[in-house]
Image (cartoon, rainbow, N blue to C red; front, side, top):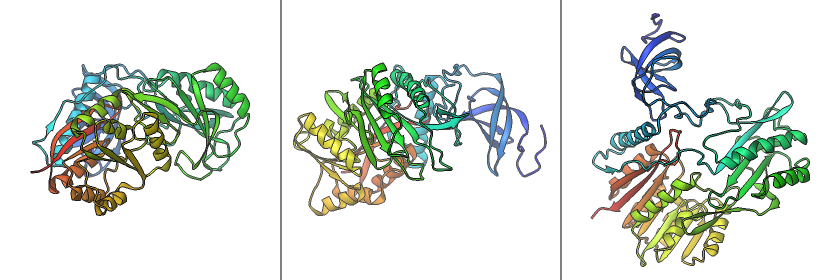
Length: 459
């Protein structure tokens, strides 16, 4: 082993053989040199690896796998060798993926929420953890005069060219995407260049109805005009008759935000339909809709169980999106109030309410942290609050408003264990008790895990 020139036992570009002892919640293996941890992607506990040190910090470093001298029995052959940064766990057996996520939840509940005593139920995995995604947003670029598509390489802005067969996309999207790219090249549509702010096509979005088979294709463009629009639509719909909606979204800003403010229907409907249980939902380009429809039903059934609603209960569904959880709750509650900051989602939620013949739900456009205190002042006292915030978790004002409303129960759905644990600590200090945490694997082959919590007001 080469000697370090600094205060660490390793140096950059050094090659060494190391035993992997642990794994991070993102799926990187952890090995140690004289107690100094090195994080090495694509390695598993118990493996002996030849690595190259690529980055050295004061307290930890990063390595790149060069060769495996000893492999773990939990290692599997990856279904995709691209490693775009999305499916970083595909070299890991599915049982080990579930165990890793379960351990992550236990760790944050102990270290962040200080809730070592709370019941954390075994994670609910998938029978078939492949081809589950019902939505993709694919950036485009240009190479050698041709438009290319693909995801960005991890920690970069470089597209991994023409990655057509993705094992988390549903099968139909894997068929449609390369044909869309073919049409764009055939008719001379230019990829958007973020440096020069020229070109037409920025992204291709595809959404599917898992249970209905309907598909929406969205062209996100810098320009109001899409070249050869009629010919593209004709060829696309002729080859794939299950496409029911073709939409153009215009984003003429210098931004890394994918969707712009203006959307227009080029062909077919303005939305697609899908079902969850007995309910039918319309999904438009900007709608938030869970990307794993099979596990969504599992998640919502658990939410209904935790909510434990009866016919006299008043329920608030914060961050309600297009009303998916709201309508599930409304089937048992006296009244449900939904809050969502995206106006288009609220429009969809109202249409979904009418489509399902439900009349005891009221939706409001606004920020949950501002609407809730207002409702509290107006005397709205819910029995149950259901909250499904973005990754950053709940705003402090919103948590204060929930605590002040003193509901009997709170059902908290989260896609980020760390922010959930932080918020649970605040709710516990505010007079609530976390009864159970249920992890659900919504995103197999990735480091992400969904959680749902049963929280009750302390006596």
